Length: 371
Image (cartoon, rainbow, N blue to C red; front, side):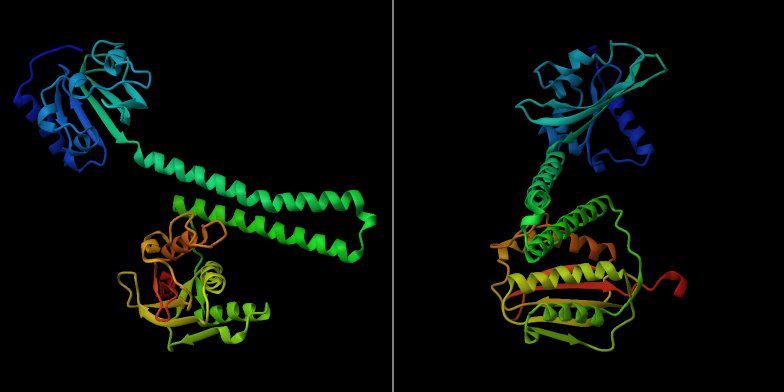
């Protein structure tokens, strides 16, 4: 890297070039370091200061390899290896890779060489620096998801394999009642695997912003009533549920299948993990969407121990399971994604009876062709 003199006017010209584009380097989310044709730093933005812990005043005017002393993962000095100013004239930059700052902190760095012509001398070296923390959090989340899925799949698939292998090998030795019991178990385990796969698909769509909402008229009171009837038919006492509907409700347009998914999850949580009466209130409410006046709100509460205050902010994150809770810990994460895909909001708090209280509000969302 060549060593030359640097001047304040040169730095000012570089800052002016960015200003002409309407860009303030300090507003960029990633670290930006720019060196001139002499290899001296002329731009060192706020994100670069935060990531490297080097003040801009100390970096400006310094040689690039001194202001940003990077090493590869094998401990070799990065700028000596790449030689941006004296290397091959056809190079246009360096792809993103993991490098180390002094002290061993790992960062993601990519470099662009700005030349005066296709093979001309380097006029600017533009360095982008990103923190690896966000990527590591994402990688950990993906690893946890894989581990959870593998664990949840192992149990039902082991059961399915065991019962089917036993039936195939010893079919004639079992009575009809025994065969039916084993086949019913296989059927239930197959449903469990299907539900898990559906959860994974929902998470994929939520994370990528591709969750589709097919809006139709939805009678929220009737939808809640169907879920209560299903629990009563399955053996829950009818007096465990209290449904209160405040009329008149606004006409609601939402995806009925996804609304059922939200209701199913919230009511199941209240039944399985709560105690006492499960109360469901369906009321008109202010719309969470700007430009609309009304929406529909559903509150599901129980009389159990509730959710600890220090867990409230983690309820809708992946893998959250309260004490003594089973399952994958993905249900409430999916519920939040579905509600937000409708333009709605969901909150959690403590019910008046002491238990957990979940409340979601959906905008009326009348399709444009009907307005």
